[in-house]
Image 1 (cartoon, helix red, strand yellow):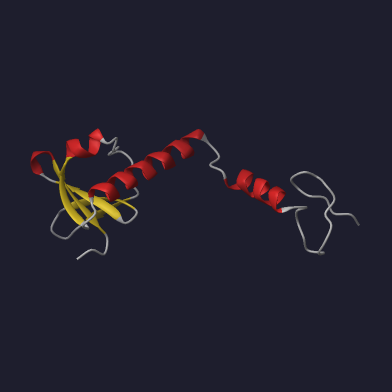
Image 2 (cartoon, one colour):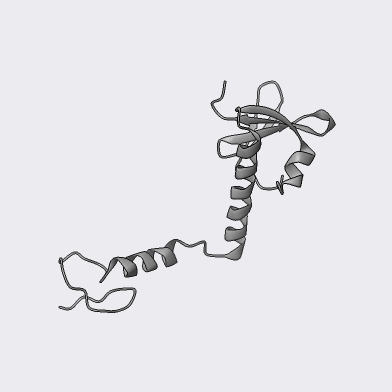
Length: 117
């Protein structure tokens, strides 16, 4: 029985358990399967990545105080986060993976990194 490549439908030659005719077809197939399926998902993931890069750039020391204006001028979007942490003392930290921020008074934010002492 002749097996056909699921990407190009070409004949597969080689091992019995081989699924694709070439590395190029395997990569093309997997890229199609794993791509963000909608514009909403793609745009949201792009905003999360951008926010994360901004926090890393401003928080090199692991704990930094910045103005909210510094974040927004770089394009930070406060509506896109990955987690919220409410502490025992009533503070609310907003996180993007391991990078987070605490909204302070007078337009300041404390940037933090999970696990930083």
